Picture: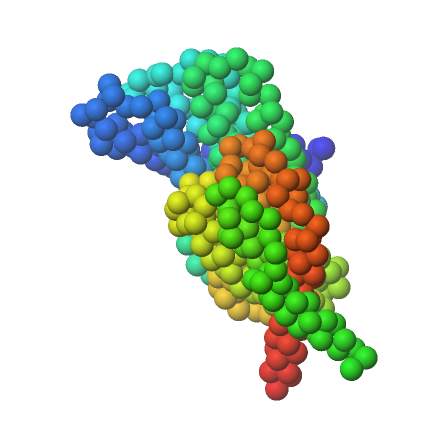
Length: 220
Length: 217
């Protein structure tokens, strides 16, 4: 527990020292939203809620992939070796998952704020939509952290990251989009119960697999 | 002969299955008509594919425990066979969809899931080719393979059941077995499943032996 806290603290300090990366991510999501806004400008009043929702999640997905792919590459190999001598692999992956979840939640909430600001906000049930964003942040972060760990071991990291992560993340993305659509339409919350359970179950599978498999990945 | 009886069995079961699959009596159903015969080929191919992916995942787990490169080769070859059978499953499914649902690739959750999982396993082969060191390649791809299998099962067998799907047994549709299959069909269907599984294993073992021979040089 102590180890976990220290490792998360380390991630946050690291991020804070390289503030350009965090600011870069925020700028990335804001400019993507703005590009979408400009592209749809002519029809902003006719933007179908379905399109609105899909567009938002695609922006979040791309932000997630580019934000999390750096989580193993921003530190040099020598330093990773140093952590290897200090901390347990489970502590490292768990701290990275938790940290990336936090990062994704912050980024996607900020993204949602700006998106709703420029593109209009047709959401019927906002607390539910925010809950979806939080669940999605955790889910995306846990899947992508593991994939980033795999991709970081290979040569052409960036291309591999997208081909490995997009298929793996689709089940989660589909569930999230369905949940978001329910919230968007302001459906009764009992309708979404099943999706939330499936989403949490997928999260649980991914996190426990990461905990089991990461020690093997770490060793190489 | 003692160790090869199952290869003979594969040939016998598949010959039997193909003959009776194409020539045997089938029940008449609306829309499906004669295309109900595809249940022998399409469905059984997917059962076999799932078995090969499971086998591959098991060999990956074994590799991580043993660090024995033969386990890695087995995992790869079973994935390759699964990709071949999956491609055939897609092709037969596509033909069937054209006949019954009117489209080569209808927008159906199960089809999309299948497309995604094929992409996932093609990514596995790309991942392997992008790593140089044998041990490292084996370990990392084993980790990915287990991960991919854990995504594959919910993708194919759980998520489509929760949404509206054209496939039987999904989205509240009754499964095929309940109404449309009669005992006559089962007598062909089950042997052909086992036949495909044996044939795929045979292909995989041959390729594993070829690999073992070439890597010794």
